[in-house]
Structure formats: C-alpha cells, structure tokens
Image (cartoon, rainbow, N blue to C red; front, side, top):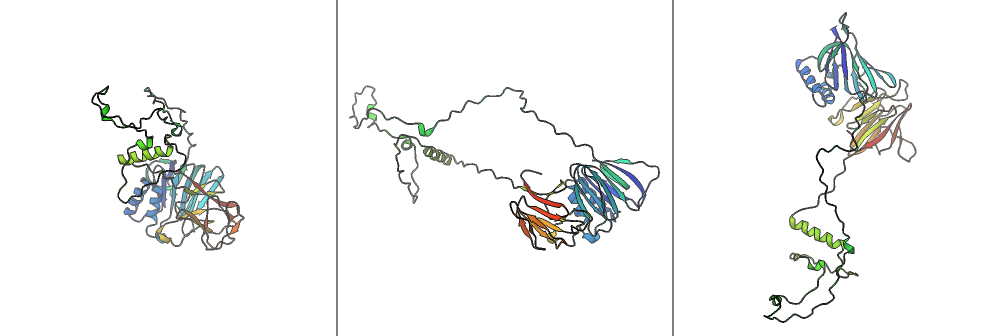
Length: 387
C-alpha cells in the first residue's frame, strides 16, 4: 500500500499512516489525542487500537474520521462524518459517504486497486501535485491509496538441499510378539542333584532343580501394596510360552513407571475459527459481534465490546439499516434478527428455510446460510489454523 496526498491550506484533515494502517481524522482538539493516535497507528494492531482511542469517550464525542487497514486482497474501511471514500476493485466502483450517519459506515472489500479520500470543505494548495507519504503525518485535502498486483507465491523446493552427509538410521526390525514361541526343553530334570564336592566343573552343588518358566513368569514383578487387589490369573487357552502383546504392554508400562516417566498426552486440536462468507466473495472473521445492514449503527455497547458494522445491500429497502446481529458465544454462532422490515431467513444444512423470530437469538452451525433478502447472503464457515 502506497499513499499519495494533496496538502491542504485550510479545512484539511490530519493523516497518520504506517505500513498497514491509515487514519484520516478531523482536527483533533488536544496534543495528547494526537500522540495517542500516532502510537496506536504505528504499533501492532493499529486498526483496533486507533478505533479504541477514537471511541474511548463514547460515540457522541467521537470525531469524524476515515480508517483503513489491510491490503489489496482484503481492505477494511470505516468512515464517519463529512468524508467521501471512493474504492475501485474487481467488481467496479464503491462509494462510502459518512455524512449524516449517526455512528459510522464499515465495509471490507477484496481485490482493491485504489481508494481515494476526499475531505468536504478542504482547500488544496495551488499548483501542488500529489506527494508521496510514507510512515508519518500530514494535513491533507485529499488522499489516494494505491495497491500493486499481489505478489506471486514463492514455490518451495520439493526436497531440501542438504550440504552435509545425512546419517542413515539403522533399520527397525519389527517382531510380532504373538508369533514368538519359546519351545520347552526336550528333557526336564525333576529332582535336584545331590550335593557333591567332586563335580565336573566344581559348581554344580550351587544349583538346585532346573525350572522352566515362561517370559511373563520370569519377569521381575513388584509385590502389591498393602490393600491393593491382586489381578486374577488370566483364563483361556494361553499355553504359558507365547508372549502376548498385552504382556509386553504391561512390561513397558511397569518399566516407564519405574523410571518415573509418563506417556505424553495426545495433542489438543486447535479451536476452529469462525467466518462469515458474503455473497460478494469477501469473508469476515467473527472475532467480535458484527452488525449487518444497509447502514448499520449502534446506540449502546453491551459488555463494553465494540461491534463491527458491516454495510451490505443496495439502496432499495429489501435490507433494513441495521438488519441482523452475529456473535460468537462459547464457540457457538448466535444470530439475531434486529426487528428488520422484511425479516431474515436461515437455511441450516439439509433443512428447509426458516424465518427468524424478531429479537430472538438463534444458534446456528457451520454451513448455515443467512439470507437477508435482495440477493445478500452470509454463510457461516469454520476453518482450523487460519489467521
């Protein structure tokens, strides 16, 4: 995003711009306000921070302004007061006029090529062409945002280039425990040899009877704690010589417990993000309440959370000024018809269209289509891992 402006000699507005956020505001009353706005615009999350500074004393004290954030792929715009914004995108030309609006106009447009801001009543300096404005501030009578073509994605090599020689791990040989059978000896000595001081190797007297035991029986096992129930012998056709998978699992668990280790918990799946997909191709993240309508406005802010105002529709009266409200409550999308003129239809996946009762919050799921009339629809979508 590049910014060019024409300086104002009278009636101009103050423009504050950073890499991704641009604020054009009517003359602020105090130096402290200018400092707070500049700190917000120049910092991380400049759009929301600037909006918080502008509205911290209530809507009645909020000055006129135009606020921009994003890129050519998705440009978010808020307009309040006597300022006109003309936006050109792939679908044509859009005009946002904040004159006569109680709160503000808000819209998100995609594939934007340019946006022009004209301040009502501002006088431009004579004989001065448009000047570039980087990160900084200026008094402007008009201003233009220009967007270049989106950069092509950089293709990644299918395999990384390794400078050093890779060490090849030894192959892992998997053994089927249930197929491993220990054969008993052909001869068994049932009686111990009598001790003799004149054996062949001199050590036979140290050993008693030769005992044949299976693997599970030969494993070292801890005595049960006091009061602990002892597991009964396993019934069935176990021949005493086959090492079962369950035996190996128990041995591994016992070894892990002796070492003080614990099995790693399964990874927690990230919570999905919720979006509203508009019929014009744009998407709105439902990170805060959203009011949708022909010219939405808000008179009070419940819970102190400032809603987003999303302007949709055409000048015909199919869609009310403030038509419907979307909010995310406990991971559930709740939609409320705000006593609109023609009502709101919802189409849940696999269900027939139903009309919302005015003023009654209704929970919907991903895939639900909300129809405001006039060809304007919003679809509830979920996505994992998106920003």
